[in-house]
Amino acid sequence: MLRAKILVLSDLATQGQREDRSGPAVRDVLKSHGWQVTALELLPDELEQIRNRLEAWTNSQDCDAVFTSGGTGLSPRDVTPEATRSVIEREVPGLAELMRAEGTRNTPLAALSRGVVGVSKRKLIVNLPGSPRGARESLESIIKVLPHAIDQIQGRTGHPA
Image (cartoon, rainbow, N blue to C red):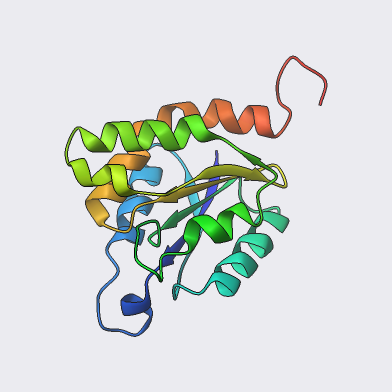
């Protein structure tokens, strides 16, 4: 069973001004595909806090992937891609491209997402949009390839690590 942690980035949700619905949406998609969710946390759109949490979670042994939701747009406070790039060792651009391509089928605004996907310490980090619908649709667009990607990241292939 694959294990995931979910990090929701939202100033308004952390201030109690808006209910977080994207974290539960991501959790529901993962669980419906047989994943175990080991954490769901909210943080404000603060680069250092996001970077620190991503580093801590990818250093732990209780997850295979970290999914972020929020902070991928064009607003000055949207810093999730920058925080993610500061901790990943390698980018996986095809997955981010696939999410944007599938998203534009429903709304041209999906092209504005700056979300990235990458690898840190043999863990996959996936940036999802902050809207519940966008997060759900983006995750659904890549969910079937994630087990194979994680097998490769963690060295479970026919090739020596």
